[in-house]
Length: 542
Image (tube, rainbow, N blue to C red; front, top):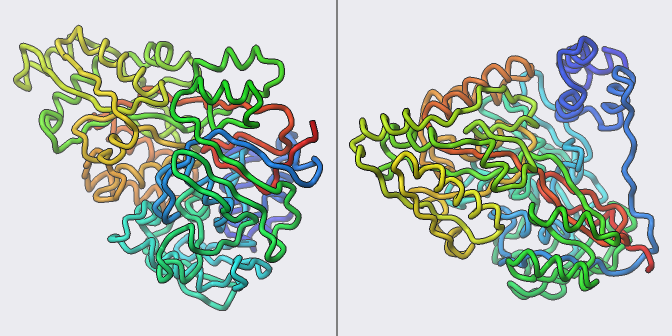
């Protein structure tokens, strides 16, 4: 494509190509940004290949015999409203039935899905999505713009409680231009709109979903599967739709059978090794070496922005005193944490929530362990004789309590006695935003600003630190509105520094993630947020 053709897609694309040619942006960041601006993934990969010499190789797709059942070991959680999803496991079930406007692939690139294409105006304050005209709901209704508008209106209702409220913080309204065109109207520019539409709580439900009880189990979907059997903590079965052809073409699988083996990692690895299931949702870090030694199993690994944060509720004593928070942070050795708690399968953190994999990441000096500083700060805060505190965490996966136990040992030399209170998942997550000190796992998002919008903006539903900083919020608005990557990185560096200086979290490390399968699954790729893409899978005959 020449510059004129690129500019017709978006005015910023010619400059983005020039940045790639001059080495001012990476191939990965070019691909991500250009596709967000409406360039097709095929065109983006073609341009990048021509400039860098690194050409796209399409992954293996479904090639097995049509039919068959894939059996997956994964927690089967309570299902209700996809827009209230707070776990990828829930979303993997929802996604077989309800679908997003955009989809984020295993390569971290956002592609059209229920929307065939989109474009943004020059300053990114209006986004127009062109919906595919061949999608139908399983009740026979056509998929139309009114469906999208109904979803957006519900998401933007703060009382509804969806994390999409903060995910789309700049979105004011959505208008149906015609049956298959929707315009999003923003109060401020936002580059991340398509990627946010690919996040797991942004699945589109039928326009009458909430009038019809608001339950996933009782409403239609546009996806290729329908729920046939479901019991919380036991099993979920989904069968291929037969009412009408799926818009995406032929689906190879007849059935998806999800089996809940509980929270013991050894139980679901044993189920895979014995042939009871074909695929695991995840394996723990301490199982990686064992899986490598099993010739009949396939090991998957990918670098991600997944992490956990030991976060302080900054309005709860004693963590409302920044000196106490700084003292605790001063005790942490991030390299040792990664080694002891996660087998060195990742990258040490810097106590902010932007990962090296994020395009706007700016490297900061890694915090150093300093017990003298910790004791001095504690004395200033009135705890010269020591401090007794408690951190709450879940029992599984094991890397979370392991990390908390290592943190407790690191605090001891400063006179801080940290009790690690290990809780069942349900107990922890019922109050996860309220614990004075808690350890929370966070999944991958393609952009660092997406995480910051979700977790640290004033008043948003997932702000578990109860942090409120007008300077931070204003800078985050600037970052959302900044298209030029170098300029956005400079703003993000300030955001990272604010989080570090205010000592609201200990962010120990970034996790590589792993899973395993038998060798009869075709088309499976480990997506950074563990999102399953069932329509492209198939099973080989054994």
